[in-house]
Image (cartoon, rainbow, N blue to C red; front, side):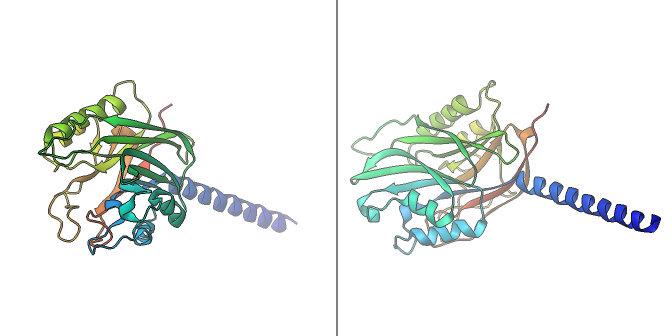
Amino acid sequence: MKNKLATRNATQAAAVLIALTLCVGKTAAEDTLRVLCYNIHYGQGTDGKYDVERLANVINQTQPDLVALQEVDVGVKRSGRIHQARQLAEQTGMAVRFGPTQHFEGGLFGNAVLTRHQILDVAIHPLPYSGSTPEKTTYPRAAIAVTIRAPSGQPLRFISTHFQHNVPEDRVAEAQAINGLFATDNEKIPTILAGDMNAQPQAEPIQILRKKWKVVLNDPPAPSAPATTPRSRIDYIFYRPSSAFRLIKTNVVNEPIASDHRPVFAELVLQKPQL
């Protein structure tokens, strides 16, 4: 009887140990966030073809939890009047929120966020821009900020944005606006910022952001554009506060055809909040 009881106790203890091990492993896995930043060039690849399914395949290969998209068309003539944000959501199995920045060719153009997590709140924030002139065409800029419930239960904010491509002063003002919106002293929520900043790592807009954000960069920074023969790093992932996250790895995805930018990937661990 004693031997049977000892065997039963040992078996139960082993089962409990296995269950605890699985729970710990699951918690660790659930705290990991796979983040992708991708300027999709309104669906047009470097081969001139519009192919949203191809973009979805690129996204799916990285198995992301959060995706920041820029240059997204919704109902625009040039891209066949399809809802690119909705189509990407359907083909990746993620929820989507679209943040339009302007009317274009009978539709809307802007940024979007894809996520696997519960969405709690969405806000679209216009950013400064100087406006077009007869000599130079510029476009309205904005940031879409989506608050989600992270696996641990705490709120997490994820932002997709796109800075002005041809006016350096606008990019500086946009970086300052991002800091004012999301990086003030009373902003405590863990936040990930991703976007096409149209500025290289040593440029003033990136240095302004780095005063308030931790930038995810390998050393030396791998270029992300143009996609065929990348020479410049202009696409980024940032986070704040730095104590809220731990970087596991980052890379620029080797994809030269689906868009004129290559996607930027990072794997982050969201730390448990300090009690």
